[in-house]
Image: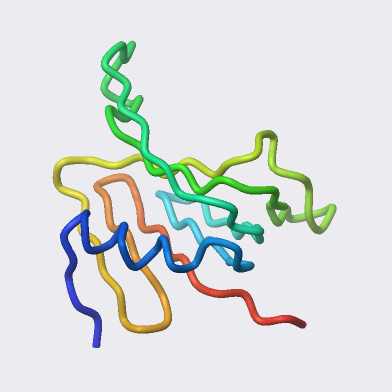
Length: 117
């Protein structure tokens, strides 16, 4: 059963996954993708100089090296050493003992430990 968390509880639990391999699944409008990453650390940014409402004021940064799954080529390296998840005032944070979910108006992000295949 998924439980709703405060952003502080979410952060405290997610921090425990530092040093682990994780999968990040994004489902946003018609865009689904998967990223496999070595999670080094977790941080947050606040952007008070947004150009428009599409740019998030807050974001969760999953820091580490990773690869994003593409349709044709398999996996491609992430363009930077972090994966950014936009956060909103209305973001819902969930954890069900095996995966985290962040539900925003734009989409759903799921974070889980990657099994060694």
